[in-house]
Amino acid sequence: MYEEIREKLPDIPVHLYTDEKLSLTALYSLNTAFDHALGTRVWLKSGGYLILEPTEALTVIDVNTGKCTDKINKEKHLYRTNMEAAAEIAVQLRLRNYSGIILVDFIDMEKKEDTEALLHFFRQCLSEDRTKTTLVDITKLHLAEVTRKRRYRPLHEAVRELKKEG
Image 1 (cartoon, rainbow, N blue to C red):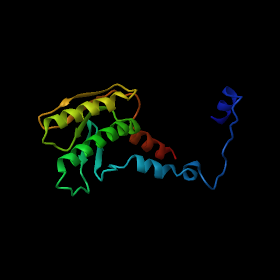
Image 2 (image 1 turned 90 degrees about the vertical axis):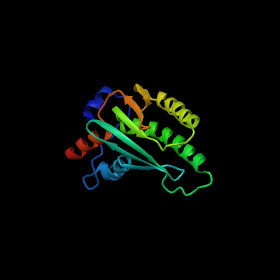
Image 3 (image 1 turned 135 degrees about the vertical axis):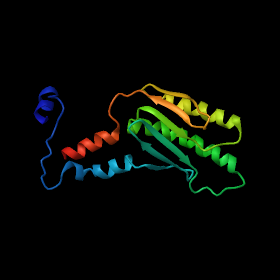
Image 4 (image 1 turned 180 degrees about the horizontal axis):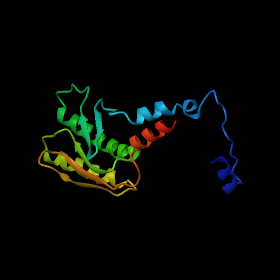
């Protein structure tokens, strides 16, 4: 591969890393980075968190309030956490390259207008994805249905394959 790169891109200086004592994976802490990127729990700044579970048939994402104990402004906090989660879910879908059917269990809110604002914002966040991603609807169980076109393997499959080789 090194020779092929040098041949096809002669103007770009390329160096072959050859240290047998320290692999590139160890040098750049790739296993740690992959483990972090593939963790099932993603913390939000608000103290809430996401649980992301890919399965063979679909991906499930659960939004939780986490450390919230604010009983006075509970609705406001739920709304803020859901909005923050919507933005982070859009990022995680791209990062992890999830595709197919994705169900998101946002935190239930009392005000219908808050739910509508959340869905509008979530649709906006998803529209930034270069891969065709659609917020289909919200089910009777209050699950947001999302579909995302498959272009490449999900990150967890690619990493699993990479670890087999290495």
